[in-house]
Image 1 (cartoon, rainbow, N blue to C red):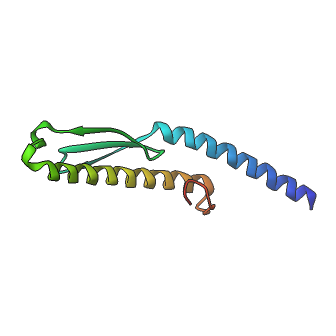
Image 2 (cartoon, helix red, strand yellow; image 1 turned 90 degrees about the vertical axis):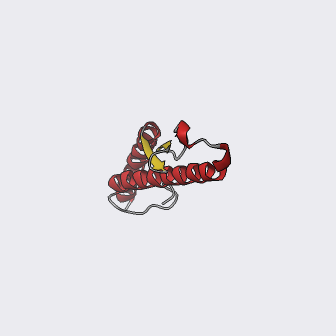
Amino acid sequence: MSKMLGNLMKQAQKMQEQVAQLQKELANRTIEATAGGGMVKVVANGNQQVVSVKIDPTVVDPAEIEMLEDLVVAAVNEALRKAQEMTAEEVSKLTGGLKIPGLFGA
């Protein structure tokens, strides 16, 4: 019984190390999303942080500020959704599809 428990603990420690490595890798990976036909571009990383926002100057019209704001929100939300999707895909590879509570929002 204690040998099984020891093996289980070793496996858990190995997975914990793999998760830490994955977190580092995902922090360096980025995903891009656009809105308004590419007029607003947002880049987010695997930690679901917005890294950059680029706005085409032709879309900056003082009379259309609300539209620009909507495009920025849409692009940010899409970038974060894609970042979550990328993270979930990588975690699934690591865990073999097993959902582990608390692991990257699983």
